[in-house]
Image (cartoon, rainbow, N blue to C red; front, side, top):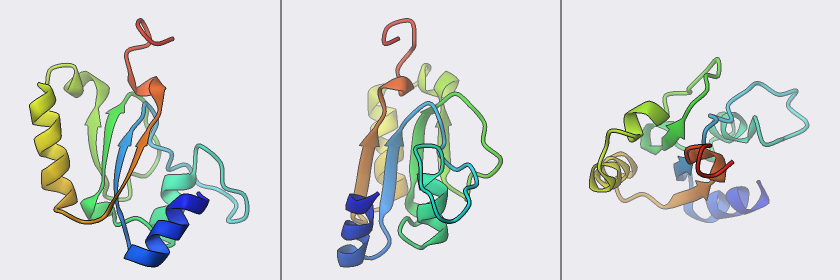
Length: 112
């Protein structure tokens, strides 16, 4: 969270490329930020531009996507790596981008 805020303070709202099984957009109490709510909070605070952000490998559902493009895990399984790369470039549009990778975006059969 501190790194994300610091980069946004310098560059303005960032694009987000998030490889994760979870959207991390659950509501929070407005005080405590945790692993399940940081994306939602960052969108609400103008740190992340949802129109230039993409989440890849999502296998769960959260109540709000905030307009972030989602490539669900079952979709990614059928895609070529180059297609995923093109989707990222198309969505981020050259904007300064925060990249985050959570290992749980991988197939749990191979990365438990």
